[in-house]
Image 1 (cartoon, rainbow, N blue to C red):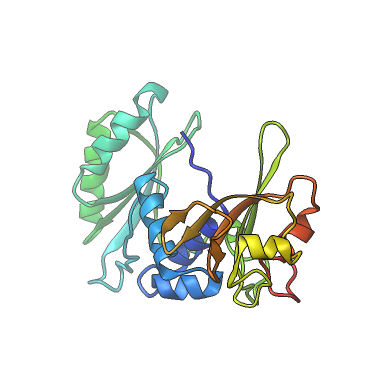
Image 2 (image 1 turned 120 degrees about the vertical axis):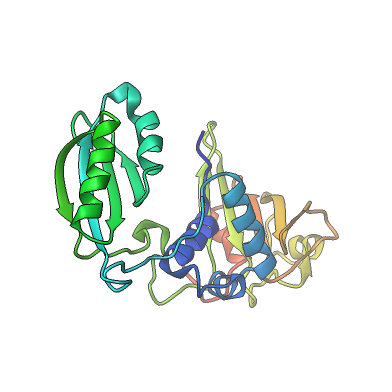
Length: 251
């Protein structure tokens, strides 16, 4: 079962993929114009849903004592992929196992050894599991990068995040982070509607504030960094969202 990521979730994942060790919730929050508590809450949720499955160190094993890293490209019966992948992972020296949806070479195993004798022993252990090694190569360099589609569209950085979901009946639902200088910031919903900042037709579904959900009422004051979920109804989307953005901001 999949979990739908909104724009804030995607940007959090991108930042953590880029450098999880040196990236804090306040740093991500500043880029997204939301609170650090909101970021922490989102990370907890992503971990609970299994989207973020852990944080690992990237190690240069050649520098760590001159060790060798080998990639084994293997073929296993389709019905046995998961079982054999788990079995391969348990072999000493194996650090990564990848299962592919392919007819051949559907199992990739990465292993580290002190020398070629260690790597031959790992190959023998794989063969004993009825894993057929099709090819074996020493890994020279591995380059990692975050998933670009989860990053900001504007590399210069935009201090807001807006996401759109279309429901089955065609209704558009937007999620927007309230900018500090937004017309509605510091104003109650009742006052915002009376002053024409927010059209009566715009329906607010929920407000995420400091990692908790606030149910919008007439007396609710919208604050900067709130993440507001809304339905424009008969109002143009840009007109509805302008209340929550910096006056001169664009998507």
